[in-house]
Image (tube, rainbow, N blue to C red):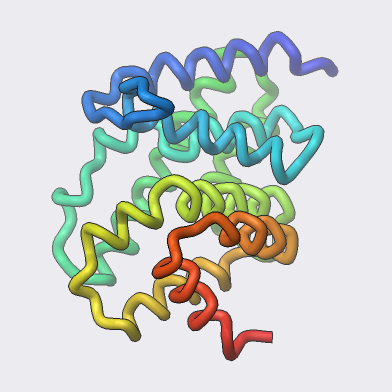
Length: 203
């Protein structure tokens, strides 16, 4: 079965949803709705890592943060445990919304359920599609948001930064590591130094 028309329908619907984000991000001098911009970064990196990605992966990457502003971090308590609860709740919401859109665009139920599973990341490491989504998300973070995140949290101690970078690296596959090392060549010196130190004891 060809998914060409349902794919275009789903991507258009996801873009329309994300364009409603009231928050903004500057991309190449243009102000874009933040989650719409994020979805474009995800799509670009997907095609960097996978030459011919499946329709389900194109949808999963585009919907990785669909309507995330509707579930703000502030609705959850402070602390690391609550942070992960928020992340898990977001993943379930993103998966549900993507599946709803896919169903409306004519995808069979099995494909809708598959994308919902990928977006909840319940099978990271065991599932190739879920791992690819994680690799793409990590590349987007390292390229677009790592520097700003560092600047906003410059008061973190060195050990905390090393844990953050180490956890990000640990979630990626060998393919993601290769792309990240290539990207690191253009990082600011202080971020490159942090990355090198975090990876010094890793195989």
